[in-house]
Amino acid sequence: MAWSGELQVEYALSRCQAFLDEVSRLKESRFPYEHSAMALERMRALLREWKRRLRNLGPKSPTALVYKDVEECLGEIQLRLPLLGFIERSTNPRTAFEVYGPLLRLARTLLDGPSGESSDQLLLVLSSEWDYVPHIMGGVAGLDGFVFLGLPAHEAVNPMLTTLAGHELGHCLWYRRDCDTEWELRVTDEVAGALTQYWSDFQGEFREYKDRDADAVHMDAVVYTEFVYPAVHWALAQCREVFADFVGLLLFGRAYLRALAYLLSPGRKVPRSHRYPPIEDRAQYLYDMATACSWAMPHELGNYTGLYPFHERPLRDPRAAFLLSLADGARRSLTGHLWTSARRFVDESGAPTPNDALTAEARCLLRLEVPCGKPAGLADILNAAWDEAPTLSGRGKDAGKARRRADSLSELVLKSCEILEYEHRTKGP
Amino acid sequence: MLKGDRIAYRLDPDSALAPAERLYIRPFRAQDIARLRKSGAASVDLRLGTWFLALRRDRVEVLRAAKASLESHMARSTYVPFGSSYCLHPRTFALGTTLEWLRLPGTLSAYVIGKSSWGRRGLIIATATAVHPGFAGCLTLELSNVGETPVVLEPGMSICQICLHELETDVPQAEHESTYAGRRKPVIGNITRDDVAKALSGSV
Image 1 (cartoon, each protein chain N blue to C red):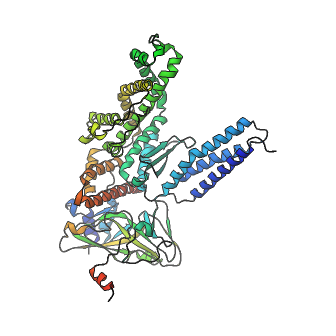
Image 2: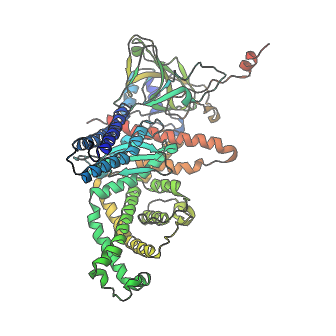
Image 3: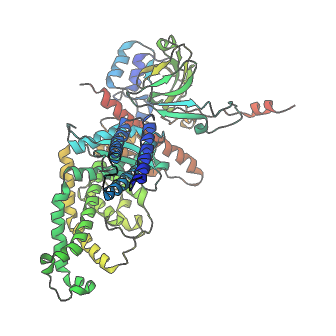
């Protein structure tokens, strides 16, 4: 007689095997870079472990455990499946493959320091995604150390958008330096302080607290759990985003801001996210920090309201909106500290940062239809290309010519990246 | 035809030439220029690039000049990074590129020729492809294995050479543009039929 959950276990085992068969098939693909195959191997090991666990279930296993294991295994498959597609697309020849080597070296220098020596070196999968915005992901469970970078499929060949990888590298840096521990304390202080300061507003929204005084913020566990904690959680997430933006700016300069504007301006009206600062705030922080450092910034990038005209829709729930305002306030007050921290980490790592003189030289070469190489670095080349790109706009009878020149610029940038790789490999001992 | 030292002069970033008058070959290291200057050769060796294009035999029934096809329909593109290889089997054909991106000034033209060391092994690279003044881009190479054994092609290996010729007069910029210019990947391009060819192909 069949035991309870036996059928589900059989189904799960079958689906697990189908997934493993797909991994085996994909492993035979011609991956330009081995990290794709390594990610597949890691997933294979995870699913084999699940298969082993399912096989160990039997008539004597508690029913609750059987269903729990089956559910978790199928959840694992559901989670990994889109990633399989992502990895398969890393073979697509419409990918900016030439960027891979310079970008990987930049990432490793940032995260592991100038020597690049680390027991858990960053692994990069460069691919494309059928999504409107770039798909950039790190810290995937079971795939520690991997960063998945995918540009929208129709623009995956555009090397100038790779500057957005700077944002994800910022997230990697945040986790690598265990910033959550330090910043959660700071954020909590800010949120608790703001709640005390705006206690009467709080009482206006949360009528059940109208007879309590502001000491409840510090004394009452319920207040902390229900109000402070969510705001801290959102503020911390927003701080991570601001920090990651700053790392992107530090690594790629105005090219980062331009790529951000290219993808997100004018944007669409969407509900306000708890976890992200409004885009115009992000753009303003970046522009303000860059101009405070006297970095050359195109004037149009400072026009946030013009670049990002559609404000996100505010939250409908006034209570959630109040808590979000606390989170926003905490993030705003910590922005300067986040910049200092990001700058210190990037400086300490020895990662190359943009250089205006080298960017100008690179731009002269691009204008002559000649690719660049050292001493220009990846950031200088991308900045030069972005500086040159606005001159390529053309409408009407000039549109075709402008298009050809834009294509040529993209080709020059990719060739320049390949030259960086060539120079790296031939530099000798 | 330019000798090694004259080519080196054209390549030298410290020469008296204006940037637009220079010959650019990228990547090309300073020591490569110095070696060329001393070599006495009348050509520059070029390396194999990282992109290949092979015809999709299963999709292309026949090639006709009159019928333009999308390159993505006709051929499959493959990227082979440094450290990897591409196997060209006997009696097969693929397009490759030079690793080097060239930019010729308006006063120079060039011919691409294969290397005899490869030719003797059955690999034919190009049939005296002409490169016009003002060209900028990677050169498409026609790779044919006419030998008996497969040939393993590795990006970065020395694959062909170019001989450079000086023109009597400069070519205006407008004449520089070509279908094959400004590309890092191999290009099939289209065969265009001119008025004469069209007239001759009509019925009596």
